[in-house]
Image (cartoon, rainbow, N blue to C red; front, side, top):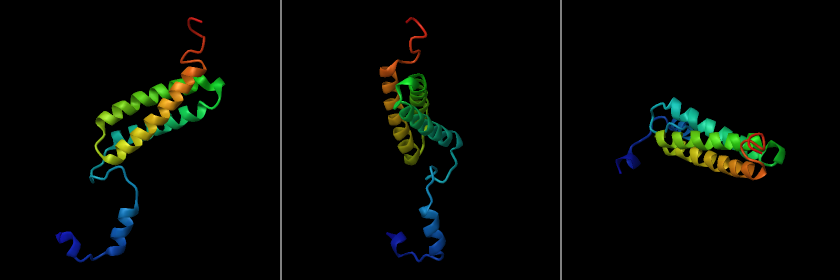
Length: 114
């Protein structure tokens, strides 16, 4: 409870620092985990947006599959809650894109074994 009564000397700077979003809430840099989180989110967005067009099933299914794999590895390596949040959102989008891409034609789309 000592934090509640401690006077703040630079309240404006402290308020600004708390308002910025960061993946590194523990104060240490995690460049690999942050990169994996952003990559998972981008792949998930790509897969889910490409899933709207059935002709883009190759892009949607491959981006979704890679997004799921990158997200799973990143989730294993993640350190902070913010990283895990981005991984879950990205993997959810990647999963949606992957499954819709699979329904529209799959990973190979009749190129192999058709």
